[in-house]
Amino acid sequence: MIELTHNPIDAPAVLASVASTQAGAVVLFLGVTREFTGGRQTSHLEYECYPVMAERKLAELEAEARRRWPIVGCTIVHRLGRLELGEASVAVAVSSPHRGAAFAAGQWLIDTLKDVVPIWKQENWADGTSEWIHPGLSGSAQTGPVE
Amino acid sequence: MKIRIHLFAQARQLAGQSEVWVELPGPATVAAVREALATQHAQLAPLLRSSHFAVGAQYARSEETVQEHDEVALIPPVSGG
Image (cartoon, rainbow over all chains, first blue to last red; front, side, top):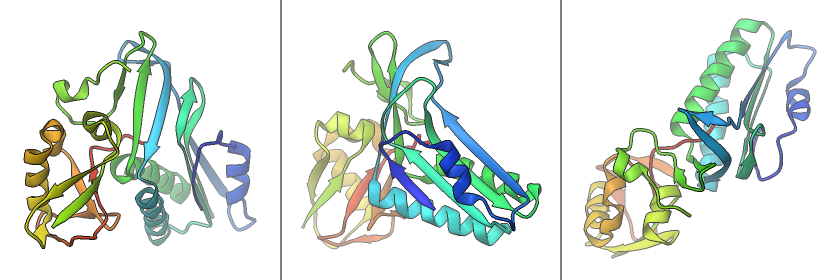
């Protein structure tokens, strides 16, 4: 199950969505808004996405994970819009008969999501500046104007 | 032909709008669209080298063909998660 939402992520509901008596292992990953990055203090984050493509890529990731591992339930939820410190931006839950596949699939899903799904994070720093995060861009392009 | 290109994140911020148009002889390759974008919207140049393009909401290779009414998007390095 795939979801892009502007609402807070309901982690217990994500867990419940992958629960099954066929699954002896359930793994949940939450990506959470962190206060300090490289010594800089974050005020809040903003996420945006390319909706039609992000949904399609997330569905492709779930399908590929199901090909690679014996997955029973798989739910990926990504939050959009403004997030405060401590709020979850992403949840990946996988259930499987045994823990090895659940851990491996969950790790692969979050790693691949961060590489290919067209979602972007804007750091809004505590000093009032902000910047869109584009990994691998040179410094001059990376430094956005103050908003 | 004229191609509309959807912009996101820093690209949208640099352009000051969520889409731009480029004019080029059609049909064109993704590589030609990239060149046209660099010359016709130079403010996006700092992002182009490390960005991908999507055609029809799928990542597109440089040699892929773009038609006039295709949905084209500039995909700068992603940072979800």
